[in-house]
Each structure stands twice: as structure tokens, then as C-alpha cells.
Amino acid sequence: MPTLNIWLIDKSSVVHKVVDTCNEIRALMLPCLKRQSYFDDVDVYFPQYKPSPENTDLVVYYLNDGMSVAAKLNEKADAYVAQDQGQTIWSDVGDTNAGKITLHCSEVHVGPRAQASAMGLAKLTVHELMHNKFKLKDALHAQGGLAAGDFNENTKLTDTNAKLFGGALSNQRLQWMDGYHHLSAG
Picture 1 (cartoon, helix red, strand yellow):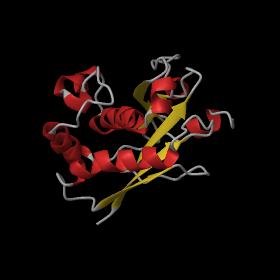
Picture 2 (cartoon, one colour):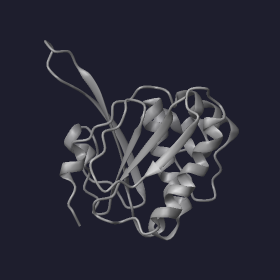
Picture 3 (cartoon, helix red, strand yellow):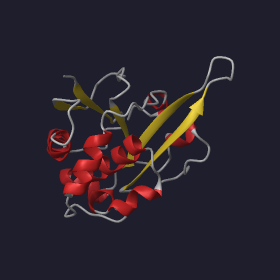
């Protein structure tokens, strides 16, 4: 069975608790893995290079200046996102002769709360990953728990969240990697 890979792109070094953040995201994903039969494990990385994710892998861009990298993919994305918030967008690209593909982009804007709490950052990250795999905008929030529109580091990943997200993990979502080039190097 394959491993779900989650790539955390932080070229600006805004995440201060790298190891703790990876551990917290992994801990949040494990109950979801138990609710599906495609993946047998999850690995969470802060790569020092541009990754080449598989079509079931996930990518999150960490930003600190409020400017959206997702807006480079789709002009309908918010061009500015407040600190300690995130957004996920997808866009059909390609010409009609070659066929269109859909690219997905999740970003988290790391502010003081997310920098102070690896758990808070992990929960914000997993929330955006839910948007990515479910391919839902605000309709996701009706599921409550960590899928809710308003949550904090004390909000729990509910059994319903784990079951539904687990079932969506094998959804193929091609991740947009050109955002890697739009980030500053520090």
C-alpha cells in the first residue's frame, strides 16, 4: 500500500516549529488513515527542494506577507489573505485541443498564533487539506469540527471529520507546483 505524502513548502522560513508541526499534522492524519484502505501511512515533509508530488499527495504553501500565491493560479482567489488564515483554490488549465487538467493549490498564511502553536498551525493546515481533497469551498464548513469555518487549536478532529476525510484521501488532486517559483527565498 502507498504512503500519503504531505509537502509543506516554506521557502520564507515562517514556520518556527518545523518538527513539531510535522508531528502534529501526522497525528491529525492518523485517525483519517484508519478510516480508509488505500494508504498505509503518512509522511509529512518540509523539503529543501521543489517536490514532485504524486496525484494523491498534498502540498501546502506557507506564506507570511498576506500576498496569495494561489492568486497566481486563479484570479478568483483572494489576492490578500489575513494572517493565521488559509485558502484553497483549483483551476482548470490547458487548451481545449490537449484537454484541460485541474490544478489545486492550498496556502496557509502564518501569523503570530500559528507561529506560537504547532498544533494550531497543524489544524489550520489540515483544514486546508480537507478543502483540497473534498474540492469544496465554504460547503466544507457545514461538517463542523476541524472542517468548520471557525475553529482554533482546541477544536477537535471529530469522528465524522476523520471518516469523511479518510474516505477522500485517495481522491486524485493534481497539486499546482508553479507556486514554488512565486515564493521569495527568505
